[in-house]
Image (cartoon, rainbow, N blue to C red):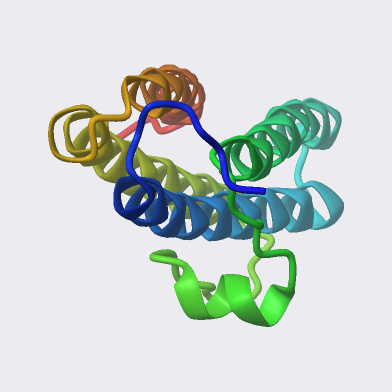
Length: 157
């Protein structure tokens, strides 16, 4: 049953398509962060292991919220890895256990998502007339800005 929430189906379809890309980005970033959690090494192993765990737990919540938002507006969420890899804006680099490279990779991904979210805020409100989803992605942007700040604090250059 389609959502009757005061937004035309063509607008909801456009929002859902953009959210599918966001969902793919969030899932790829979650997986990358989890991988780094598993494979981190160094004299600060315990700290970084816990740090990455905190970040991937937050990303797991975000993944769920994005998927549920897609459902709230009357569409089905992607859930297959093959679909996520087709839709994502993020790259999967070669494996690394070098902390500085892990942090840089994650920071780059958060900043890519932040830039995309910033565009979606106005697109959803102005073009698609969906203030609820615009507000939703504004909150996600703040979460990613905080996670990016935390990652950035580990970069000493």
